[in-house]
Length: 235
Length: 235
DNA sequence: CAAGATTAAACTGTCGACAATCGACGATTA
DNA sequence: TAATCGTCGATTGTCGACAGTTTAATCTTG
Image 1 (cartoon, rainbow over the protein chains, first blue to last red):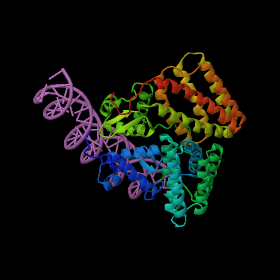
Image 2 (image 1 turned 90 degrees about the vertical axis):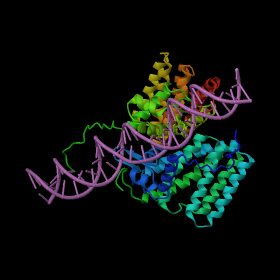
Image 3 (image 1 turned 180 degrees about the vertical axis):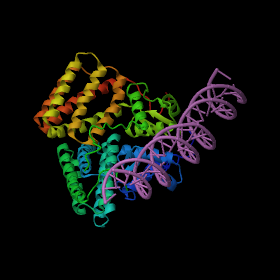
Image 4 (image 1 turned 60 degrees about the vertical axis):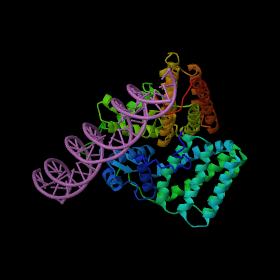
């Protein structure tokens, strides 16, 4: 083993992974609303803008397709997925199913270190609740939920969460404002953490179910106010 | 609306999807054991064999990568995923979580038609139980579980099931023989269907949990007998 | 003879090119 | 006038090629 090229603190920047980079860039563009739902993703345009050829762009698009952010329309190109009300319902329904399970697993695996990490994240949530910064609030909320899935210890479960979260952020970003009172969100988070620390599966499931269910109802209400047209339409 | 150009009976024919075809072929090759876990997937070789260029092969490989059947090793190519014991555990754990939920949803959506379809599938399972054809048995078992997810009515849930099933079939095919007595499998299937028809969520969850859990323990035992080396290794 | 250095072959990542196809717009016709 | 048909530009699907890297095979050397 060579000690040169120290592996320590290696800021993962495999600059050799063009496809991954493009995928990340496209994902960000979609989540942040630069690529609106229904918009056509012109390969040549993306490639030109990034100063690369179309091949890596196409491969990245395939990744996002499998991930549900894009839909491939043969001979017509890739389009940014349009989320209908039914999609929101599906995503939240699965989220509840998966995150409840993650909560139970996390309780089993909980260590002092991971417990403290969760507590700290709740503190952060409480602090950001006073900031009137919806984007930040959503971000920290997302982190808390993700931590639970991380602690659960299943790679597949975590990836599933990430996929669902990506899809959700499309609409959350679109809604723009927060979907509930920041303080109340923080409170239900605390309830979830308490349940995990106590370790009773039924209570954990009930709390997470309630917490996510509340968000579901809010988002569903807001989304239904926005009209929607079938997928694959132009611009 | 015009009555001319009747849209009736038009059989859509979008077989122009080369990438999708390649993805299916590769998936089959992996499931059927022509591509063994750990094997290197040489783009040029696949392309030559299929009489096409490398571009569609690469895009198909990206799909399978996101799906978990292949892993991409930058600058070194794609390899068939090697499933460790921990992977089996993760998959079955998620399966239980997801399929229990699917069962509850299916019970809510159950119609006479879908109920009969499930019953017929159980009949098929009973028939194939006497045939001593493990591959067929696994296939019909898979169909039964998939039907429940279909009836549940969530596209994402169904896709998740398909992804997990693809991964599992890699090992099932590898094990070769069936992991339990066909008759007993058929019996627990009947128990699951009964519960769904009755509609009590708790009972449904308990039965599905038990049914899949039994398979889990069997497969886990068999898999742990097979040694395994880390991913990305040669051949 | 074994371990390291060197060279050759094979493979990946990326690119530019070309034919096939799609969508839009305008011409044609009843 | 309204619907259909044909044309044209834009875009996708696929290909072959080339540079850089990895893998293997061969050679060197203590």
